[in-house]
Image 1: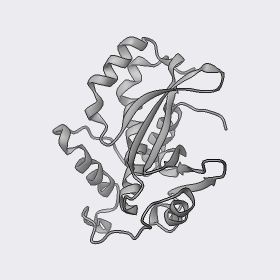
Image 2 (image 1 turned 90 degrees about the vertical axis):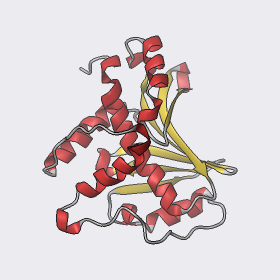
Image 3 (image 1 turned 90 degrees about the horizontal axis):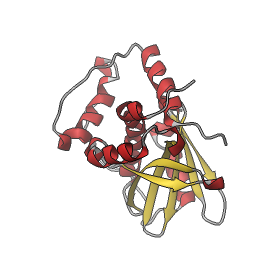
Image 4 (image 1 turned 180 degrees about the horizontal axis):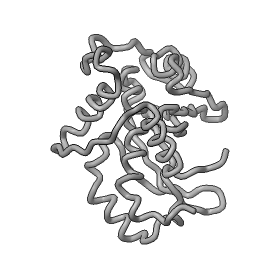
Amino acid sequence: MENKSSAHYQRLFRQRLRDQGLVKKEVWILPENAQALLAVERKLRQPFEGLAPVEKDGEMSMPQIWNARSLCQALLATELFSSGEASVELLEGAEPSLHVTMREYGDLPLFIALSGEQILVEALLWPQSEVTDVQAFNEEVLLSRQLFPLSSIGLETGLGGERFYMMFGALSATSILSNVIYEIETLASNVIRATEAYEGYLKAQA
């Protein structure tokens, strides 16, 4: 699979929103209200007459502890995946994982790993080689971590020794399914927001 930076998916995401007739508006909020804003934003992308309450009336059922196969089957039955807004694929192996494609975000790929009592959802941001000033960028990431609720940014070394910035979120393997969905949607949104927030540190794309 070809690795594409989050800037590629950001461009596709923005174009898709424009095609839907949506416009970008800047808001100023307290950092602790970021999660609430994300939920409200998703509601406001729907026609007014179709708005549904942000609060959930009930929780989705789940097994006691998720594994890759059971989580994949459960996700396929949710509205996010059954509607085609996202797709999920089970990746078999010594440690099975999930590959999620977020159609709404320009086919942004996410990966879900389940290990012991933890679910890890992650996405590639960009190679370290695309950052113009690594030290300044790393400092900025540490100073602005509160901008991305439920998500963190780290470095991973890929094949060949190249380093990549990754965004990830973690939750318990006993989490209710609605919380897993929320983690997936939040991470996808945060990847796009991170690309916008840090684009000044990235080399210009040809």
